[in-house]
Length: 193
Image (tube, rainbow, N blue to C red; front, side, top):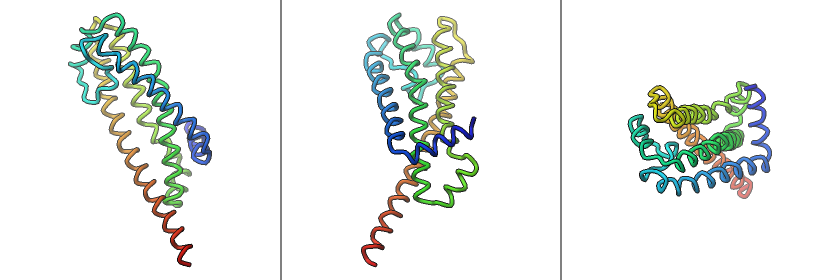
């Protein structure tokens, strides 16, 4: 399974329209989630969905749930349905862009990464996002019972997701800059020669 997923990432990194479709999926789901987020404070005590709060604590989860209306619970479930699609599109998009960038910036590193299926590691943020969603969905659906383990899973997975996301996005940007520099250097070398 990991090998097939990695092969799909590599295929996407060679196929512009596949990357465009992943980007469209990511952007489309984010727009829908953003529209729910904008309406959400009116349905709660002024809070936005947990998934959009990067400094969320378990204590905040339970205190915010106390302010949820029936409409807020319904909106949160719709938000969660989208948030199972968004990280998949986003993770695959980032992995494909990273593979493209590494291939053009550092071909030896690219061959090393391909031989070991390393571009799949970029999807760790997606895995942690799913764990966050499971924990928070469990917490919301169990309310008014306060399931500490569920809230802790959601909050801890959120921290892990953000760590993996910032690391992989940062590396991808660095490799994109290196690839652009390498491309510009090759163009300047041709002009001088």
